[in-house]
Length: 326
Ligand code: NDP
Ligand code: GDP
Image (tube, rainbow, N blue to C red; front, side, top):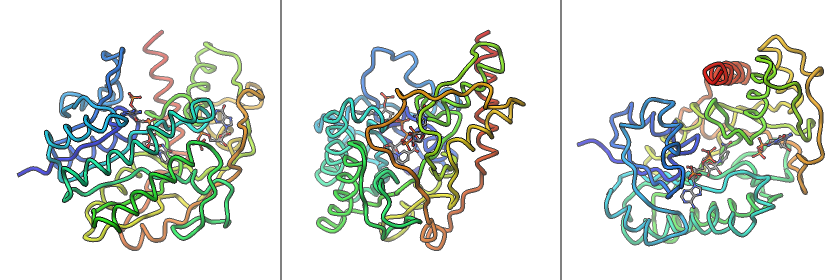
């Protein structure tokens, strides 16, 4: 019989790629979807990947424990991936309590529902490199102490430790992937890589003349979402639940990422990019650089897509989107 997986956050970037991966492995894929006034476009990412018809959607919300219990009773999954979150760091200063309710307590709700209804399920928590924040070591691994720098990171830390705690307290098969930034053509447009590739496409097609950004000196360890969802799946295939860093081991400034994206379209970034205070943050995470040695050793995981390849794919996808609209 086919394995069943339930994904919270299926309408997001990672949810869509993970659904695609699991379908390719013969899973029956279910996704928790919160009610939206834009029901006609909420499955846009799934449609972009051509899999909207292949996944089954269950009505629910991370802050409604009863909906999670019902979803688990209905689906009876072997694997449960908790990807849903208020995931944008900058918004977490404007909506700190909502971020806590969804990203922190929401994860607690998913764990609690699993403990009550599906204690045998294999659980994945989407933890984040943002938890390292003000970094306590130049290269961050599973043993590096955390120092969150935003309400988002604080909320993720709660969810991360709840995952560890439910594993240790109740024997839940609960694993946490500490994923460094990962992007794709399906990345939310508010995140810097996608904002840049969309900006490049607009400028190239004459739809915009400039692109306003914030801190160009920040450094991130950027990978591709398609590579990173494979690591999530691998974690749940292990006999023993555990925590893993997933990263490329290379860090690049926003400035250099911007230069690469513009160059892909034959443009010089310095002619178009300006900076605007509005995009600065109350507290910045200056640099992140992950050591995925444990994921490599235990899971046999390796990233396959370089930053340059990914930015090229993203610019091309945004050019195609805008051309279609024109
Ligand atoms: P997205 O922002 O693209 O997706 C977030 C998903 O959560 C969406 O499907 C959204 O639904 C859903 N969601 C938000 N609030 C609720 C709620 N109250 N109830 C149910 N669903 C809700 O994130 P990504 O796909 O990029 O990331 C996936 C996870 O991984 C997130 O938890 C993120 O914080 C974490 N992460 C991401 C990293 C990255 O670089 N991408 C790095 C490390 C961790 P809707 O469509 O309705 O908004
Ligand atoms: P984050 O690492 O989860 O916060 O991912 P983002 O893509 O939102 O931001 C990555 C880095 O890019 C952060 O250090 C931001 O301060 C920096 N950055 C610079 N300009 C911008 C911008 O215009 N938008 C966003 N989202 N980030 C920017």
